[in-house]
Image (tube, rainbow, N blue to C red; front, side, top):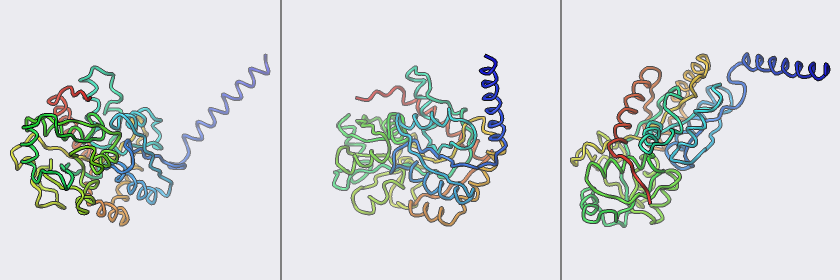
Length: 327
């Protein structure tokens, strides 16, 4: 019995020593995981990979991207929200981080996560969404698209990255503002949603420019309008919905980095410093230019204010749209 107690005490002591050693180890001293909560091919994934590569150079430490997908991004976001707050599990989130908890409330569900479970590290980009259809479709303009949708409620379909995801919310805000009914076909992420429209399985898609511009240039997709307050620089001839008389149809897919709440301040500061260096890295800038996604870097109080204001606006948008059922 005495030997057993001594063995237990030895294990406890070893665990304590190990814990102290880990607490005192310099950060970072092992690989960092950057979670992209959507499949490859979407805005989150396309942004996460150059960010991770640039952070790896700045920190002189491995940073790997892991796609944890499902439930319009909620699976990956919840994973990070409940991860150990030690700086080794980070999140590359889109604006849907503010949408999902509000949608859960509408359905009377326990939220998968709440925004206060995260610490904002940096805003990387903020792109307006654009509406695209296949090049062989009958709609040459957004007005033709909306007029046809009014004549044929529920006949025009669109794909999305999931129920209440960023791509879904953009289309719902348009539907709400224009007074039309479209048929929603949700997928597991922006990549599969893009595949669906290219394959002729749906009629339309709301997307960040980075995902669809290569297909617009290749003549496979036709852009009709944008959800921003100004025209997309790469598509200066394409009007905004605001110009067309639908001011409620304003939506942005922004990408930012977050850490779990409770991450030590020295670790957060090191990550902020690394991100500031990363966005100035020539390879990172070149990667974002190839995506035709302008860098919109914000940190600290500036990003906090942006995040809180956008969260309020999106929560209000979800409440306006209300409970959306899919078939």
